[in-house]
Image: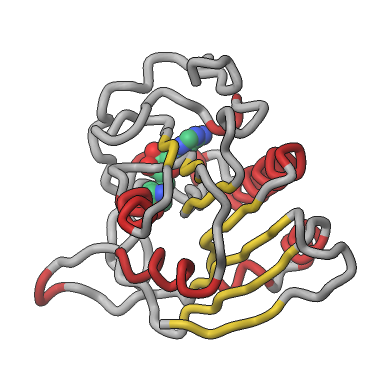
Length: 218
Ligand SMILES: C[S@@+](CC[C@H](N)C(=O)[O-])C[C@H]1O[C@@H](n2cnc3c(N)ncnc32)[C@H](O)[C@@H]1O
């Protein structure tokens, strides 16, 4: 950002990349470069029903603004950035190069790249990339004494490494989505969503030893 808290030190990522088409099993959706999957509005609305976010909110992987717009409609002030310029917020900002929340931000909300598409899957380190993302997000959140809401696959939470990572910070609430997310509307060819998802919400003002609460939402 202009105050220098976000370093953009990346090669030219501002151009919209061509879509890369490679088949994935079961869902039939083609993977998108940089894992670009706009989140349907109801998913962000479900989060907002169950948590109170402090302002301003940072959306560090904003894509075309699908999630940020819902936050703004709910009255939040949003700072939106992404590695790629998709016509919303500020492009060319690599989350991994950021060393702090943008000035003044108190909460981070995003649907992060899962890292199992494009270059990352070729490198065969999807799960490690995702964990790296979560670890960095938690580091920045703790440094800002802030809040973090991440949309994750429900199944991911149960992994040993994930559970250690999740428990290392003040997890305050888990919002389990009882409806599966359909990432694209392909008309009559739309497939049922493949995964269940949940919002993980950490809040540094949540008492250290208090257990998180679990709620279900659709
Ligand atoms: C799953 S999409 C989610 C988009 C948006 N958050 C939403 O929910 O609609 C993931 C986004 O992460 C962005 N992204 C991938 N790697 C990134 C990085 N290292 N830093 C910032 N954004 C990144 C992609 O460009 C893509 O827009």
